[in-house]
Length: 157
Image 1 (tube, one colour):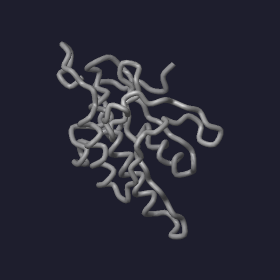
Image 2 (cartoon, rainbow, N blue to C red):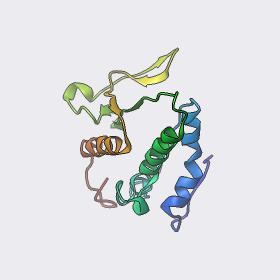
Image 3 (cartoon, rainbow, N blue to C red):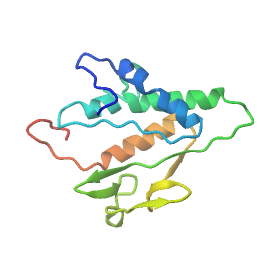
Image 4 (cartoon, rainbow, N blue to C red):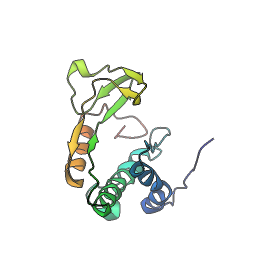
């Protein structure tokens, strides 16, 4: 069962409006995940990234969530301190690859469960980000390290 299936005429903003509650939950102390799933050329990258992560009109879910996160931080009580970190990894051919540290030893990371943190990717790189721009630049860096090969359905796969 899916939470939501969007039609081909759905705008980036409409998709974000459906998932923006995840950011609110994160700001309340919960973990949050938004996942796009589907076959090659179904629109997962378009939905998550958009045409440009920098241009607000064409942003996908991820940059819009980043904007929302930092807007919430800016509006928060001045006595509250926040730490924002990002890790970026992919599961490719059943191996977890660290996209922020693409060294060979970081291409088969282990998934562990801990009592304090739940499931974690062991030894994954974490980058501290102080603002929206540094987080988006880190995402762009990770995207350059993704495993991809063109397919008959999509040159970006």
